[in-house]
Structure formats: C-alpha cells, structure tokens
Image 1 (tube, helix red, strand yellow):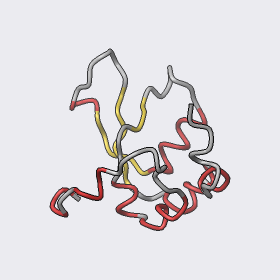
Image 2 (cartoon, helix red, strand yellow; image 1 turned 60 degrees about the horizontal axis):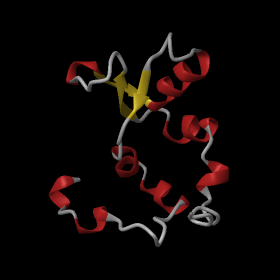
Image 3 (spheres, helix red, strand yellow; image 1 turned 45 degrees about the vertical axis):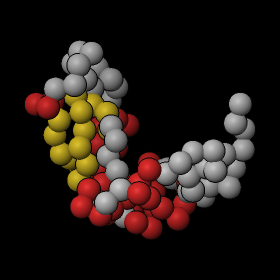
Length: 103
C-alpha cells in the first residue's frame, strides 16, 4: 500500500472548483456523455472547463451525464499546473519519452 505519494502536493489544497473556474474556466475541454457501457465518438463535445464545473455543481448525473476522460491538454494550455504535483517515484512518467509531435 502506498500512503505518502501525494503528501507534498500543493494540488491537494489549492485545486478546488473555484481555483479551476478562476484560472482555467475559459479553457475548452472534451467531455464525454455517458449513455451506455461503450465509448462513442459522437458523445464527445468540447465545452469551457468553467461551464463543465458549473453544470456538475448545479445538477446531478441524471441531468448532466458528462465526465472528463484523459484530457491532458489542460496541462498544455496551463503548464503552471504541473508545478502543483509531481509524478510519484513509484510510477514511470511515459510523457517524458513521448515525441514532441504527440503534444
């Protein structure tokens, strides 16, 4: 059991909904609509992060069945977020060896 992997992360205290609304609210993200147990490309849409946060805070899963999945582009748009956490020593960061053309 790993118990200390995130103890030193600033993200644990500063990454709140308000933080992301203020800092990244206008940044577009992809959200996925959950309709069944399958991924469907037509169920993906782009919305500003602030709108996504507002929708999930105002409703529930029945009224807004969208989730964020693997949207690493937020870190491309806001590289300052990377300073708030560190990949734990127990895990290998595959992004370090990816060619720049994948970014």
